Image (cartoon, rainbow, N blue to C red; front, side, top):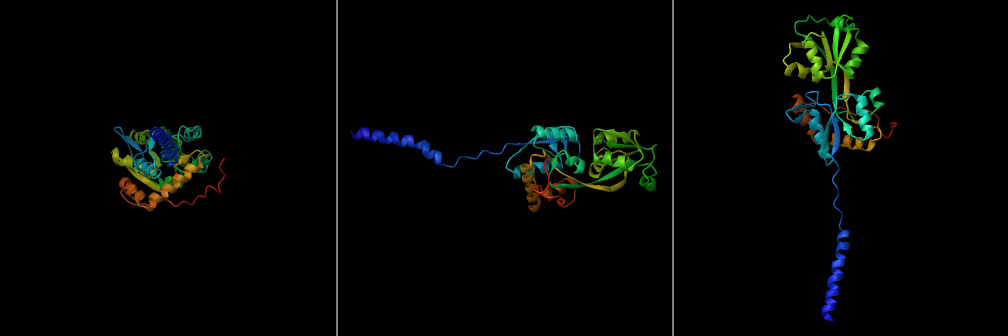
Length: 273
């Protein structure tokens, strides 16, 4: 009888083990990797060297993901705001970081993070050109061909401010090549990207106008994904406070700059359609 009672006690203890284990805190499931679109055509912000994705935006997004306790699955997609918006709305991507300037028109398609980079436009021409600033200020003439990247703020600015004939290209490198090949007389693009094109490709260019049309870059989300946008905003602000943003900025641009101020309304006050 005693042996039988001992047997019953052992069985009872064994049966209680799952319940005891169930009382322990369940291990938390790590967040899924962030699906992030980038075009990787805008050195020094994003590009591919060999098989390695590199650039200011790559490092910044990897740091944001680490702050959120996850990683990044990169998706390469050509620069096209309507296509980006469709991918975000369909859920095939969580966000886009691709040197996207925040504009009212684009805000109708996507939800932006707080600004993470302050940019300006610049213009360049061949070194042997006798540049005339007054003609530039007057909008040039239709006889002058200006190269810009398609669907960018540089194209918008040229359309609104220049009487010159515009020629559009799908990548910054092709805009620069058009000037080198004398297909255009002037090119307009984001200043940091243009500066890199001048240095890295060793073209005989000179930057003749710079620092105009200030604009802020933002990370794009689906307009319904406010929760993720707020998490990314908080991560950017923490990276700034802790000095990580400064280290990444100095690595790619050789000097320090503050994270642009967030002068946009809080999302709780903004209409999200």
